[in-house]
Image 1 (tube, rainbow, N blue to C red):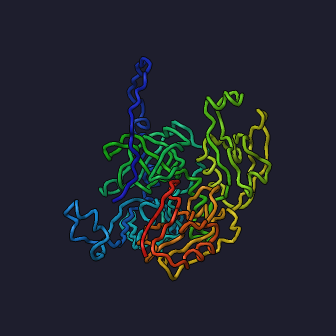
Image 2 (tube, helix red, strand yellow; image 1 turned 60 degrees about the vertical axis):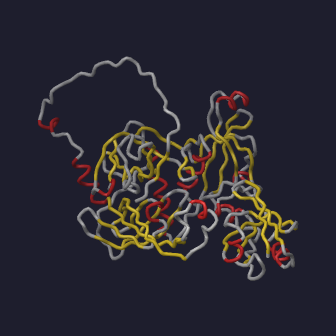
Image 3 (cartoon, rainbow, N blue to C red; image 1 turned 90 degrees about the vertical axis):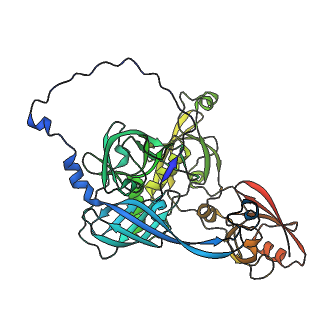
Length: 462
Protein backbone atom coordinates (compact mmCIF):
# COMPACT_ATOMS: atom_id res chain seq x y z
CA UNK A 1 0.00 0.00 0.00
CA UNK A 2 1.46 3.31 -1.05
CA UNK A 3 0.55 6.81 -0.08
CA UNK A 4 2.30 10.11 -0.46
CA UNK A 5 3.30 12.02 2.66
CA UNK A 6 4.80 15.42 3.27
CA UNK A 7 6.79 15.86 6.48
CA UNK A 8 6.57 18.86 8.78
CA UNK A 9 9.86 20.34 9.92
CA UNK A 10 8.51 22.95 12.31
CA UNK A 11 5.37 23.68 14.29
CA UNK A 12 3.74 27.08 13.96
CA UNK A 13 1.84 28.60 16.85
CA UNK A 14 -1.04 30.95 16.11
CA UNK A 15 -2.35 33.55 18.52
CA UNK A 16 -6.13 33.26 18.67
CA UNK A 17 -8.54 36.08 19.62
CA UNK A 18 -10.87 35.65 22.57
CA UNK A 19 -13.67 33.31 21.53
CA UNK A 20 -17.27 34.48 21.74
CA UNK A 21 -19.69 31.73 22.79
CA UNK A 22 -21.96 30.68 19.93
CA UNK A 23 -25.71 30.68 20.40
CA UNK A 24 -27.04 27.21 21.18
CA UNK A 25 -30.54 26.34 20.00
CA UNK A 26 -32.68 23.24 20.03
CA UNK A 27 -33.79 22.13 16.52
CA UNK A 28 -37.27 23.48 15.94
CA UNK A 29 -38.47 21.14 13.16
CA UNK A 30 -38.11 17.64 11.80
CA UNK A 31 -36.31 19.08 8.77
CA UNK A 32 -33.64 20.67 10.99
CA UNK A 33 -33.19 17.45 12.95
CA UNK A 34 -32.74 15.38 9.80
CA UNK A 35 -30.13 17.62 8.14
CA UNK A 36 -27.54 15.19 6.75
CA UNK A 37 -24.93 14.59 4.08
CA UNK A 38 -26.54 11.23 3.37
CA UNK A 39 -28.20 12.32 0.09
CA UNK A 40 -24.84 13.58 -1.24
CA UNK A 41 -23.06 10.39 -0.20
CA UNK A 42 -25.83 8.26 -1.65
CA UNK A 43 -25.36 9.94 -5.03
CA UNK A 44 -21.54 10.21 -5.06
CA UNK A 45 -20.27 7.10 -3.26
CA UNK A 46 -21.21 4.55 -6.00
CA UNK A 47 -18.82 6.35 -8.39
CA UNK A 48 -15.82 5.97 -6.04
CA UNK A 49 -13.97 2.66 -6.45
CA UNK A 50 -11.29 0.63 -4.70
CA UNK A 51 -8.17 -0.10 -6.73
CA UNK A 52 -5.83 -3.05 -6.21
CA UNK A 53 -2.65 -2.82 -8.29
CA UNK A 54 0.25 -5.25 -8.51
CA UNK A 55 3.68 -4.88 -10.00
CA UNK A 56 6.39 -7.50 -10.46
CA UNK A 57 9.91 -6.23 -9.82
CA UNK A 58 13.22 -8.05 -9.90
CA UNK A 59 15.49 -7.73 -6.92
CA UNK A 60 19.04 -8.98 -6.67
CA UNK A 61 19.44 -11.41 -3.75
CA UNK A 62 22.92 -11.15 -2.30
CA UNK A 63 24.39 -13.81 0.02
CA UNK A 64 25.99 -10.90 1.92
CA UNK A 65 22.71 -9.05 2.55
CA UNK A 66 22.85 -9.82 6.28
CA UNK A 67 26.38 -8.48 6.61
CA UNK A 68 26.43 -4.66 6.51
CA UNK A 69 30.20 -4.56 5.85
CA UNK A 70 30.37 -6.91 2.85
CA UNK A 71 26.96 -5.89 1.52
CA UNK A 72 28.23 -2.42 0.60
CA UNK A 73 30.81 -4.03 -1.72
CA UNK A 74 28.61 -6.80 -3.19
CA UNK A 75 25.26 -5.07 -3.76
CA UNK A 76 25.28 -6.09 -7.45
CA UNK A 77 26.34 -9.64 -6.66
CA UNK A 78 23.81 -12.48 -6.64
CA UNK A 79 20.88 -13.72 -8.66
CA UNK A 80 17.77 -11.72 -9.49
CA UNK A 81 14.50 -12.81 -7.95
CA UNK A 82 11.02 -11.53 -8.86
CA UNK A 83 8.94 -9.93 -6.12
CA UNK A 84 5.33 -8.73 -6.24
CA UNK A 85 4.58 -5.21 -5.01
CA UNK A 86 0.98 -4.46 -4.05
CA UNK A 87 -0.63 -1.04 -4.08
CA UNK A 88 -3.99 -0.09 -2.57
CA UNK A 89 -5.83 3.09 -3.44
CA UNK A 90 -9.03 4.63 -4.72
CA UNK A 91 -10.39 6.01 -7.94
CA UNK A 92 -13.33 7.96 -9.35
CA UNK A 93 -15.55 6.92 -12.25
CA UNK A 94 -16.10 9.96 -14.49
CA UNK A 95 -18.02 8.40 -17.39
CA UNK A 96 -20.60 5.67 -17.74
CA UNK A 97 -18.41 3.57 -20.02
CA UNK A 98 -15.82 3.03 -17.28
CA UNK A 99 -13.26 5.83 -17.43
CA UNK A 100 -11.65 6.15 -13.98
CA UNK A 101 -9.32 8.80 -12.55
CA UNK A 102 -6.73 7.88 -9.92
CA UNK A 103 -3.18 8.76 -8.84
CA UNK A 104 -0.05 7.82 -10.75
CA UNK A 105 1.57 6.56 -7.56
CA UNK A 106 -1.30 4.07 -7.16
CA UNK A 107 -1.45 2.59 -10.68
CA UNK A 108 1.11 4.29 -12.91
CA UNK A 109 3.62 1.42 -13.00
CA UNK A 110 1.31 -1.49 -12.28
CA UNK A 111 1.34 -4.73 -14.28
CA UNK A 112 -2.20 -5.68 -13.26
CA UNK A 113 -5.06 -3.50 -11.98
CA UNK A 114 -8.30 -4.70 -10.41
CA UNK A 115 -11.09 -2.23 -9.70
CA UNK A 116 -13.89 -3.02 -7.24
CA UNK A 117 -17.09 -0.95 -7.24
CA UNK A 118 -19.15 -0.05 -4.21
CA UNK A 119 -21.70 -2.73 -5.17
CA UNK A 120 -18.89 -5.38 -5.27
CA UNK A 121 -18.69 -5.63 -9.04
CA UNK A 122 -15.10 -6.15 -10.20
CA UNK A 123 -13.35 -5.12 -13.42
CA UNK A 124 -9.89 -5.45 -14.88
CA UNK A 125 -8.47 -2.09 -15.92
CA UNK A 126 -5.69 -0.71 -18.07
CA UNK A 127 -3.96 2.66 -18.01
CA UNK A 128 -4.99 4.99 -20.83
CA UNK A 129 -2.80 7.94 -19.86
CA UNK A 130 -0.59 8.73 -16.89
CA UNK A 131 1.80 11.42 -15.72
CA UNK A 132 4.13 11.18 -12.76
CA UNK A 133 4.70 14.93 -12.43
CA UNK A 134 1.00 15.62 -11.95
CA UNK A 135 0.41 12.31 -10.11
CA UNK A 136 -2.63 11.54 -12.23
CA UNK A 137 -3.64 8.44 -14.20
CA UNK A 138 -6.64 7.72 -16.39
CA UNK A 139 -7.91 4.11 -16.46
CA UNK A 140 -10.40 2.27 -18.64
CA UNK A 141 -12.44 -0.58 -17.20
CA UNK A 142 -12.81 -3.54 -19.53
CA UNK A 143 -16.31 -4.43 -20.73
CA UNK A 144 -17.94 -1.77 -18.54
CA UNK A 145 -21.09 0.17 -19.36
CA UNK A 146 -23.83 2.18 -17.69
CA UNK A 147 -21.78 2.84 -14.54
CA UNK A 148 -22.45 5.52 -11.92
CA UNK A 149 -20.16 8.50 -12.42
CA UNK A 150 -19.42 11.99 -11.11
CA UNK A 151 -19.56 15.30 -12.93
CA UNK A 152 -16.52 17.57 -12.67
CA UNK A 153 -16.93 21.02 -11.15
CA UNK A 154 -15.07 24.12 -12.35
CA UNK A 155 -12.39 24.13 -9.64
CA UNK A 156 -11.56 27.80 -10.29
CA UNK A 157 -14.90 28.65 -8.67
CA UNK A 158 -14.12 26.92 -5.37
CA UNK A 159 -13.84 29.14 -2.29
CA UNK A 160 -12.14 28.66 1.05
CA UNK A 161 -14.70 27.58 3.64
CA UNK A 162 -16.85 25.44 1.34
CA UNK A 163 -18.02 22.13 2.76
CA UNK A 164 -16.48 19.08 1.07
CA UNK A 165 -16.51 15.31 1.52
CA UNK A 166 -13.55 12.96 0.99
CA UNK A 167 -14.54 9.48 -0.19
CA UNK A 168 -12.09 6.60 -0.45
CA UNK A 169 -10.78 3.37 1.03
CA UNK A 170 -8.45 4.34 3.93
CA UNK A 171 -6.23 1.55 5.27
CA UNK A 172 -8.24 -0.95 3.21
CA UNK A 173 -11.12 -0.98 5.73
CA UNK A 174 -13.71 -0.31 3.02
CA UNK A 175 -15.29 2.77 1.54
CA UNK A 176 -15.33 5.62 4.04
CA UNK A 177 -16.60 9.20 3.97
CA UNK A 178 -15.08 12.10 5.92
CA UNK A 179 -16.33 15.68 6.03
CA UNK A 180 -14.49 18.97 6.21
CA UNK A 181 -14.01 22.29 4.46
CA UNK A 182 -11.76 23.72 1.81
CA UNK A 183 -8.93 25.07 3.96
CA UNK A 184 -6.82 26.73 1.27
CA UNK A 185 -6.34 27.16 -2.46
CA UNK A 186 -3.34 27.40 -4.77
CA UNK A 187 -1.03 25.42 -2.48
CA UNK A 188 2.02 25.23 -4.73
CA UNK A 189 5.04 25.34 -2.43
CA UNK A 190 4.72 21.67 -1.50
CA UNK A 191 7.25 19.00 -2.45
CA UNK A 192 5.96 15.49 -3.14
CA UNK A 193 8.50 12.86 -4.19
CA UNK A 194 10.80 15.60 -5.47
CA UNK A 195 8.14 17.17 -7.69
CA UNK A 196 6.05 20.23 -7.06
CA UNK A 197 2.36 20.55 -7.78
CA UNK A 198 -0.67 22.76 -7.27
CA UNK A 199 -3.32 21.64 -4.81
CA UNK A 200 -6.56 22.32 -3.00
CA UNK A 201 -6.12 21.98 0.76
CA UNK A 202 -8.81 20.41 2.95
CA UNK A 203 -9.22 19.35 6.57
CA UNK A 204 -11.42 16.38 5.62
CA UNK A 205 -9.65 13.31 7.01
CA UNK A 206 -7.46 11.65 4.35
CA UNK A 207 -5.40 8.56 5.14
CA UNK A 208 -3.37 5.90 3.28
CA UNK A 209 -5.72 4.26 0.79
CA UNK A 210 -7.61 7.51 0.13
CA UNK A 211 -5.15 8.31 -2.66
CA UNK A 212 -7.02 8.71 -5.93
CA UNK A 213 -10.36 9.10 -4.18
CA UNK A 214 -12.91 11.86 -4.60
CA UNK A 215 -13.18 15.25 -2.96
CA UNK A 216 -16.76 16.35 -3.67
CA UNK A 217 -18.83 19.42 -2.82
CA UNK A 218 -22.29 19.40 -1.24
CA UNK A 219 -23.84 19.10 -4.70
CA UNK A 220 -21.96 15.84 -5.29
CA UNK A 221 -19.66 17.31 -7.95
CA UNK A 222 -16.03 16.29 -8.18
CA UNK A 223 -13.84 19.09 -6.82
CA UNK A 224 -10.53 17.24 -6.86
CA UNK A 225 -8.60 13.97 -6.57
CA UNK A 226 -7.15 13.32 -3.11
CA UNK A 227 -3.41 12.76 -3.39
CA UNK A 228 -1.36 13.65 -0.29
CA UNK A 229 -1.41 14.47 3.41
CA UNK A 230 0.83 16.49 5.68
CA UNK A 231 1.76 14.24 8.58
CA UNK A 232 4.42 13.17 11.04
CA UNK A 233 2.62 10.08 12.32
CA UNK A 234 1.38 8.56 9.05
CA UNK A 235 -2.26 9.34 9.88
CA UNK A 236 -4.46 12.32 9.13
CA UNK A 237 -3.67 15.58 10.90
CA UNK A 238 -6.40 17.48 9.10
CA UNK A 239 -4.12 18.78 6.34
CA UNK A 240 -4.81 17.02 3.06
CA UNK A 241 -4.31 17.97 -0.57
CA UNK A 242 -6.29 17.29 -3.73
CA UNK A 243 -5.51 17.82 -7.42
CA UNK A 244 -8.03 20.34 -8.83
CA UNK A 245 -10.75 19.06 -11.14
CA UNK A 246 -9.78 21.44 -13.95
CA UNK A 247 -6.46 19.63 -14.39
CA UNK A 248 -8.31 16.31 -14.35
CA UNK A 249 -10.53 17.62 -17.15
CA UNK A 250 -7.48 18.38 -19.30
CA UNK A 251 -6.17 14.84 -18.70
CA UNK A 252 -9.50 13.34 -19.72
CA UNK A 253 -9.56 15.34 -22.95
CA UNK A 254 -6.14 14.03 -23.95
CA UNK A 255 -6.98 10.45 -22.95
CA UNK A 256 -10.12 10.57 -25.10
CA UNK A 257 -8.01 11.92 -27.98
CA UNK A 258 -5.84 8.81 -27.79
CA UNK A 259 -2.77 10.28 -26.08
CA UNK A 260 -0.84 7.88 -23.84
CA UNK A 261 1.40 10.55 -22.32
CA UNK A 262 0.18 13.90 -21.01
CA UNK A 263 1.34 16.80 -23.17
CA UNK A 264 1.57 20.23 -21.56
CA UNK A 265 1.68 23.60 -23.25
CA UNK A 266 5.26 24.82 -23.18
CA UNK A 267 6.18 28.07 -21.46
CA UNK A 268 9.91 28.17 -22.15
CA UNK A 269 10.49 30.58 -19.26
CA UNK A 270 12.12 30.67 -15.86
CA UNK A 271 10.74 32.87 -13.12
CA UNK A 272 10.23 33.40 -9.43
CA UNK A 273 7.40 34.58 -7.21
CA UNK A 274 7.45 38.28 -6.37
CA UNK A 275 7.89 38.63 -2.60
CA UNK A 276 7.74 41.78 -0.47
CA UNK A 277 11.43 42.60 -0.85
CA UNK A 278 11.36 42.15 -4.63
CA UNK A 279 8.15 44.19 -4.92
CA UNK A 280 9.74 47.06 -2.96
CA UNK A 281 12.87 46.95 -5.12
CA UNK A 282 10.76 47.07 -8.29
CA UNK A 283 8.43 49.77 -7.01
CA UNK A 284 5.37 47.51 -7.15
CA UNK A 285 2.56 48.43 -4.76
CA UNK A 286 2.14 44.90 -3.38
CA UNK A 287 3.83 41.53 -3.91
CA UNK A 288 2.04 39.61 -6.64
CA UNK A 289 2.75 37.67 -9.79
CA UNK A 290 5.82 35.92 -11.19
CA UNK A 291 8.82 37.82 -12.52
CA UNK A 292 10.37 36.31 -15.65
CA UNK A 293 14.11 35.84 -15.28
CA UNK A 294 14.90 33.96 -18.50
CA UNK A 295 13.09 33.15 -21.75
CA UNK A 296 14.05 30.51 -24.30
CA UNK A 297 14.61 31.90 -27.78
CA UNK A 298 11.60 29.89 -29.03
CA UNK A 299 9.36 30.56 -26.01
CA UNK A 300 5.74 31.42 -26.92
CA UNK A 301 5.92 34.10 -24.22
CA UNK A 302 8.87 35.69 -26.05
CA UNK A 303 6.96 35.40 -29.32
CA UNK A 304 4.06 37.25 -27.66
CA UNK A 305 6.36 40.15 -26.77
CA UNK A 306 7.28 39.39 -23.15
CA UNK A 307 10.85 39.71 -21.93
CA UNK A 308 12.97 39.19 -18.83
CA UNK A 309 11.89 41.50 -16.00
CA UNK A 310 8.18 41.39 -16.88
CA UNK A 311 5.88 40.32 -14.04
CA UNK A 312 3.13 37.88 -15.09
CA UNK A 313 -0.03 38.59 -13.08
CA UNK A 314 -2.56 36.26 -14.70
CA UNK A 315 -3.16 33.70 -17.43
CA UNK A 316 -6.57 33.31 -19.00
CA UNK A 317 -7.98 35.67 -16.37
CA UNK A 318 -6.70 33.58 -13.43
CA UNK A 319 -4.05 34.86 -11.02
CA UNK A 320 -0.55 33.42 -11.16
CA UNK A 321 1.47 34.00 -7.99
CA UNK A 322 4.04 31.21 -8.35
CA UNK A 323 5.86 29.38 -11.15
CA UNK A 324 3.87 26.24 -10.25
CA UNK A 325 0.65 28.17 -10.70
CA UNK A 326 1.75 29.30 -14.16
CA UNK A 327 2.37 25.68 -15.14
CA UNK A 328 -0.95 24.57 -13.64
CA UNK A 329 -2.87 27.20 -15.61
CA UNK A 330 -1.15 26.18 -18.85
CA UNK A 331 -1.72 22.46 -18.17
CA UNK A 332 -5.39 22.98 -17.29
CA UNK A 333 -6.01 24.97 -20.50
CA UNK A 334 -4.38 22.28 -22.64
CA UNK A 335 -2.76 22.39 -26.05
CA UNK A 336 -4.19 24.43 -28.87
CA UNK A 337 -5.73 27.85 -28.84
CA UNK A 338 -4.45 30.93 -27.07
CA UNK A 339 -4.46 32.52 -23.63
CA UNK A 340 -4.43 36.15 -22.59
CA UNK A 341 -1.55 37.02 -20.28
CA UNK A 342 -1.64 40.13 -18.10
CA UNK A 343 1.75 41.42 -16.99
CA UNK A 344 3.56 44.43 -15.57
CA UNK A 345 6.37 46.22 -17.36
CA UNK A 346 7.92 49.29 -15.76
CA UNK A 347 5.07 49.26 -13.26
CA UNK A 348 2.38 49.52 -15.95
CA UNK A 349 -0.11 46.71 -16.74
CA UNK A 350 -0.08 45.26 -20.24
CA UNK A 351 -1.68 42.34 -22.05
CA UNK A 352 -0.53 39.89 -24.71
CA UNK A 353 -1.84 36.72 -26.32
CA UNK A 354 0.25 33.56 -25.83
CA UNK A 355 -0.10 30.48 -28.04
CA UNK A 356 -0.66 27.19 -26.17
CA UNK A 357 1.84 25.01 -28.01
CA UNK A 358 3.91 21.91 -27.33
CA UNK A 359 7.67 22.29 -26.89
CA UNK A 360 9.30 22.32 -30.33
CA UNK A 361 11.19 19.16 -31.31
CA UNK A 362 14.00 21.05 -33.00
CA UNK A 363 16.84 20.91 -33.70
CA UNK A 364 16.67 17.20 -34.52
CA UNK A 365 17.35 15.05 -31.45
CA UNK A 366 19.72 12.76 -33.42
CA UNK A 367 19.04 9.69 -31.28
CA UNK A 368 22.09 7.41 -31.12
CA UNK A 369 22.62 3.98 -29.50
CA UNK A 370 26.17 2.71 -29.09
CA UNK A 371 26.59 -0.98 -29.92
CA UNK A 372 30.31 -1.37 -29.31
CA UNK A 373 33.09 -0.16 -26.98
CA UNK A 374 33.00 0.22 -23.22
CA UNK A 375 29.93 2.48 -23.60
CA UNK A 376 27.84 -0.14 -25.42
CA UNK A 377 24.17 0.02 -24.42
CA UNK A 378 24.15 3.81 -24.12
CA UNK A 379 21.32 5.68 -25.89
CA UNK A 380 21.71 9.44 -26.13
CA UNK A 381 19.86 12.37 -27.69
CA UNK A 382 20.66 15.93 -28.54
CA UNK A 383 18.86 18.23 -26.12
CA UNK A 384 16.07 20.39 -27.56
CA UNK A 385 12.93 21.84 -25.90
CA UNK A 386 10.91 18.65 -26.45
CA UNK A 387 13.65 16.44 -24.98
CA UNK A 388 14.05 18.82 -22.03
CA UNK A 389 10.32 18.67 -21.30
CA UNK A 390 10.19 14.86 -21.58
CA UNK A 391 13.13 14.34 -19.24
CA UNK A 392 12.50 17.20 -16.82
CA UNK A 393 15.66 19.12 -17.72
CA UNK A 394 16.13 22.89 -17.38
CA UNK A 395 15.35 24.42 -20.76
CA UNK A 396 18.61 26.38 -20.64
CA UNK A 397 20.71 23.17 -20.71
CA UNK A 398 22.24 22.19 -24.07
CA UNK A 399 24.30 19.28 -25.29
CA UNK A 400 23.68 15.52 -25.14
CA UNK A 401 21.57 13.64 -22.57
CA UNK A 402 21.43 9.94 -21.73
CA UNK A 403 17.98 8.65 -22.69
CA UNK A 404 18.52 4.99 -21.71
CA UNK A 405 21.38 2.85 -20.53
CA UNK A 406 22.11 -0.87 -20.41
CA UNK A 407 24.99 -3.33 -20.47
CA UNK A 408 28.57 -2.05 -20.08
CA UNK A 409 27.47 1.61 -20.00
CA UNK A 410 25.20 0.91 -17.03
CA UNK A 411 27.98 -0.92 -15.20
CA UNK A 412 30.20 2.10 -15.80
CA UNK A 413 27.80 4.15 -13.68
CA UNK A 414 25.91 6.17 -16.29
CA UNK A 415 22.20 6.85 -15.70
CA UNK A 416 19.24 8.16 -17.71
CA UNK A 417 19.13 11.94 -17.39
CA UNK A 418 22.91 12.35 -17.21
CA UNK A 419 24.13 15.19 -19.42
CA UNK A 420 27.40 14.28 -21.09
CA UNK A 421 30.06 16.99 -20.99
CA UNK A 422 33.32 15.27 -21.96
CA UNK A 423 34.59 11.78 -22.78
CA UNK A 424 38.34 11.32 -22.39
CA UNK A 425 38.78 15.08 -22.66
CA UNK A 426 36.69 15.41 -25.85
CA UNK A 427 33.82 17.89 -25.54
CA UNK A 428 30.41 16.34 -26.31
CA UNK A 429 28.05 18.78 -28.02
CA UNK A 430 26.19 16.38 -30.34
CA UNK A 431 25.68 12.58 -30.43
CA UNK A 432 28.19 12.20 -33.23
CA UNK A 433 30.88 13.63 -30.91
CA UNK A 434 30.21 10.72 -28.57
CA UNK A 435 30.43 8.25 -31.44
CA UNK A 436 33.91 9.55 -32.29
CA UNK A 437 35.04 9.47 -28.65
CA UNK A 438 33.73 5.92 -28.17
CA UNK A 439 35.97 4.63 -30.97
CA UNK A 440 39.16 5.68 -29.19
CA UNK A 441 41.43 2.87 -27.98
CA UNK A 442 42.34 3.69 -24.39
CA UNK A 443 42.59 1.57 -21.26
CA UNK A 444 41.33 4.14 -18.77
CA UNK A 445 38.10 6.00 -19.53
CA UNK A 446 37.02 9.32 -18.08
CA UNK A 447 33.44 10.59 -18.53
CA UNK A 448 32.36 13.99 -17.19
CA UNK A 449 28.61 14.35 -16.66
CA UNK A 450 26.11 16.77 -15.14
CA UNK A 451 23.72 14.86 -12.86
CA UNK A 452 20.93 16.62 -10.95
CA UNK A 453 22.84 19.88 -11.30
CA UNK A 454 26.08 18.42 -9.95
CA UNK A 455 29.25 17.82 -11.97
CA UNK A 456 30.59 14.26 -11.71
CA UNK A 457 33.60 12.46 -13.16
CA UNK A 458 33.33 8.71 -13.83
CA UNK A 459 36.58 6.78 -14.21
CA UNK A 460 36.76 3.12 -15.21
CA UNK A 461 39.07 0.70 -16.94
CA UNK A 462 38.45 -1.18 -20.15
